Length: 452
Image 1 (tube, rainbow, N blue to C red):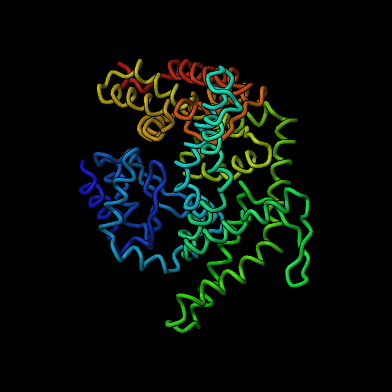
Image 2 (cartoon, one colour):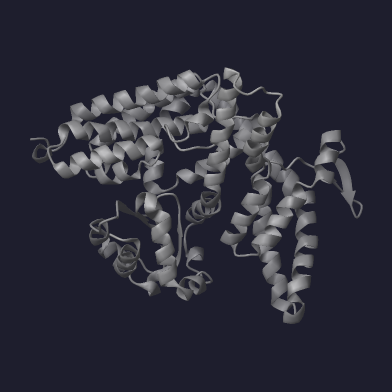
């Protein structure tokens, strides 16, 4: 079904334009916040039967319609068809009625999803550089290596600017002013002082500790959230003729010192403490943590809450130069692929065989939703295979503390981010995940009417 028609049908079945409070999208699904989800729930089966819809999930205050790789195209049509209604409805109070945890995950998803392509691309290039350097194809002291290294590092170094722009769109304040704030935090004057060890400075005689904000996550997100309130407050009394000049000036003068003096240092300390605490716990309970997250990660994907792990991964990379969570997620993803592939050998239905084959390919790249919603949900016993494979692969990843240098689709779509000393164990981990889930899936089988 073409994107325009699919968007039209989805909007109609969820209750029409009037039912939509707001809509965003991630890598595979449309995420609707509905004013009233009664009609959408009633039409859930009709939605799932649409050609192009892989599944529907109503969780966390969001009505999520999974459409796979063409989500950006379908979202563009949904956005066009909602028009002004969508923009105006975002000013409503529907989000305020949701539980704080639902709003929290929705906020994280809305901020991080738009910048994932940049993070993934940079992570892959960083991994490739490791291989090229180890093979001696590019000398580490050459200009070529330097340029490529800058390209791969820039996204992470200037992450506060990317997050600022994305967070401003989510919090509905000026993206340009937010990006400027991110740039201020990374200004050479500040970074030079930190590099020299001159971190004890003052602003109007108020002393504060200057921090290194490159690759940081929490300070700019909290800062832009604060900016959204400050900007709206200033606009509420600022004359329109003066708004274009004085609102940005006042917003910067108020917000930046608050970030530098209060929000920044506290956020950096909290982020570092959390990262150190997580890694200390992980180091002592590697096999337990690996098994649990490896097994349960597909369930996070199922509910659309897996993006809550992304800030942890980025904080780990910023603090330690590597992350250990992504490998555990890869174990869970691969387990889904193995279980889905087992369907190909058990199913007699051409539809299920075709879905199994296509879902296996997309799953190996890193998009597991087609198999997860098209087959695993349909044949719930296969969850046993997914849990077993994810736990087995996570155990391997955990014991050997497999590292990644960035974020990428997994198990194979972003494989370069795992290049390094633990790469062999990564390959072993995903192989174990796949084999265990595949074998268990074969034993579990399908209902009689599908396996005859």
